[in-house]
Image (cartoon, rainbow, N blue to C red; front, side):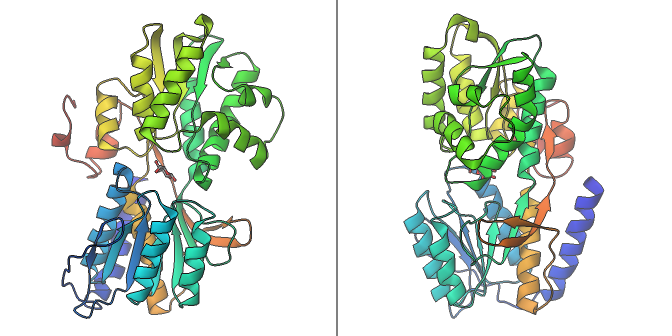
Length: 382
Ligand code: BGC
């Protein structure tokens, strides 16, 4: 895995260094919708525009840092804008970037369907659209998609709970991401694929969703079925919503749903909020809780024993893949893809990246030795 990543980075580096000098490296500061940063030409023209969902989650700041490093190194004029949780701001950001002459738009949608209008505008302006991490749905205006293997993320989370919970009738609390995010469904599908048989056989008892309970033994779920489960378990990717929902679930739970419990939390930010709520309940004797993104705060939680695992999604690889696609487009070469994802209307050519499970045992190897973080970022790391 490490070897593959290294060779990918080397290939990228080679491709990029060949193109150094194509753009100017002059840095221009600017104030834009939702905030952001840019490295633009004297004329204000931008070649590659990037739109990310929010600055308020460390996950997307990691992506921003990777994009800027790679594109600046390659001498490409670029600008990163944040939508701050608003599809309207997202659309304005896309329009701002179109007006600056971008050739390629790399966009992680705030809302999978609402983003369609923004990218359709970009396509009409002759821009190549790359959907980043989250798929934009119900439109033909998506050229490419770069993504992690989101189904595997959910499987890893569910399997971790299975491998680490002891006994039978273990209360299982389920939390999910935002229903406006296609990934939230895929993460849940992955987790459900391994957890559902373990509910059916009596290892777990679902503690906070009678909808999920009602689908045990029902076979493959439709999007509508899943939407009903998300309706009861969504955190909306928001820390406060996650904490309040966990607190409400704990208040409503009977004594047999307390004690030693397992918690499927969809990502690190919501996982920490949910973990805090469970830690504060005196009737909870222990909890296992999942996450994803390897955010610094969660890595510290893992070192401190407050979060059990995270799924490392190496943003260096995803940003590098997206930039490789952008470069191919700009050079008129064929674009590297490995699979396709159906977005409800078309099969979008995609490049998918593997993920790595991180626990206390391999935190150093996965995140420090790979150069993703510095050991000094954390306390108590052995
Ligand atoms: C991303 C996750 C992220 C979540 C909330 C998902 O689409 O894949 O990495 O934690 O959104 O921002």
